[in-house]
Amino acid sequence: MRRSTLRLLLLIAMLPFTVLLAATLYRLGMASLEGEPRDFWTAIEFASETITTTGYGADAEWNHPLMVIFVTSLQFIGVVLTYMVVPIVLVPYLEDRFEERLPQKAPKQSKHVLIYRYGPPVATVLEELIQAGETVLLIENDATVIRRLMEHRVPVVQRRLFEEALDDVGLLKARALILNGDDEENAALTVIARQQGFKGQILILVEEPFHRAAMGLAGADIVFSPRLVLGNALAARASHRISPRIDGTMHLGSQIEVREIRLDSDSPLVGQSLEEAQVGQETGAIVVGLWVHGTLLPQPPPSHRLEARDIIIAIGNRGNLDRLSKLAGGRHRIPTYLPFLVVGYGEVGEEVTQALRQAGDQVIVVDRQAKEGVDVVGDILDPGIVDVVDPASKQGIILALDNDKAALFATVIAKHRAPDVPIIVRVNGADNVEPIHGAGADFALSIAEVAGRMLVQCLLHRETYSIDPKLHLDRLLAPKLAGLHPHQVDIRRRTGCSVVTVERDGQLLPKLDHDFVFEPDDRLLICGTAEANEAFRRLYV
Image (cartoon, rainbow, N blue to C red; front, top):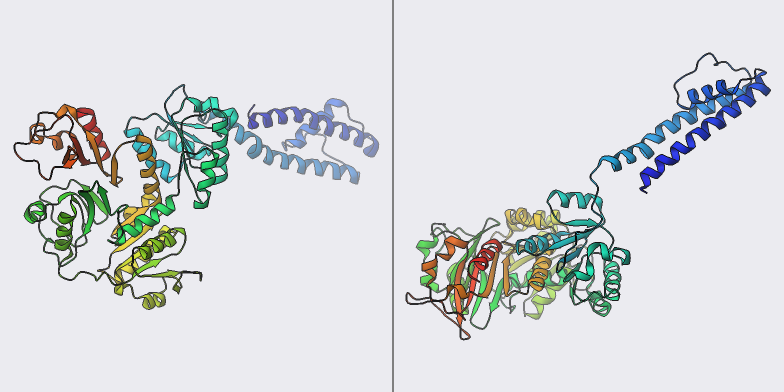
């Protein structure tokens, strides 16, 4: 029985008892103190009128002080009960009675992915898994979160994933379980799932990196520490010495890689359209996307004009990309011997600093608290601290603050003081990436994006390389294209993605000539949004 219903039943049961008790005391008081006995029904009428505060009839005069005190006290008790009954009993009962009931049990299904507790990383995973046609079920405790998810038609149940709930969510028939609760809860759920016979994959997002080993002992297959990965990703965005690149550059085999290249203000490419710049002919690199004012343009049209601080996403071998980097860097490139400025020395900032120093870069660290590893103690939003660290004399600025509002403000200040220095920002919420880009950041990475990409790559078992949540590289076989040239099928128009190159007999073909035709065993490297790449799979795989 629901708690609100039980409260209402208790109220109904107690009401007659309260009226009878008040009527009995009233009869005794009137007979012994006032000398005016009252019959049973007159006393009942008095008690009900007083408790409900509706007023009195003819019986409304008392002389003895104790009777006056009794009647007055009963009046206050009636007022208090009236005001308490509405919010404590009636409102919860009506809410439970008329609001939409939250789902407590999942439909019968198998081979589905169970996700425990919603959060920013889970939002990324849900979107990509649903796009890939996977069956997903989210388990959540928070009623407000559940109603919001139901509005977006996300399959969700309100349960705690302990022993009694296993059958309700079909755990033993699921193919994977993602745990996004706190570390202690994740460990307990892992042990319970394994004890109940769950044989599928368990993936855990941990808050504290030192819990990773313990999660493995509990029965987890893969344990992620998103903050550590984010720290390395930020360092890779900043320094070209870090290899292999985690986000800024990705190596796809020994011959080809993806790189994001910033256009300096004095680059000869600035002001030209992609068609006029002839990047492919001049460098051999293939442009697959552009960051423009914080917005990603996947597969930009040839007529798009390049601007200073645009970021070109290009694919090619190292020589191709080095030529493009030199062309994009202009004549006055920032010297690589200058130090990096890291602002914020929490878990992410410490990982960034360690990665940069291991790569041979100099680093100056700023944090509000004095601790080992911090070079300058103070708030980067303080003009005095900005003067001390001099952002304009740095090779790059990495903002690893744990507050997105402070990160946005710091981005504005850094861009004002050092307009030509690249700014890389750690972001907590994926929704804040675009505003921080708009404030002047060259790169902004969120924990949600990093964790979501890792989980999706493990669950889908695809050779997928995520440049950005909106742009992916997939390496796959497409036997339905055998005997055809790319232009014959017009892949880009039909799917929205492009064939970047082809791997044949272990070698990447540098160019698809006019006489080229696909062979059944060719492995294609395609680039596009998740939807475009999925459309390619449906048509040609």
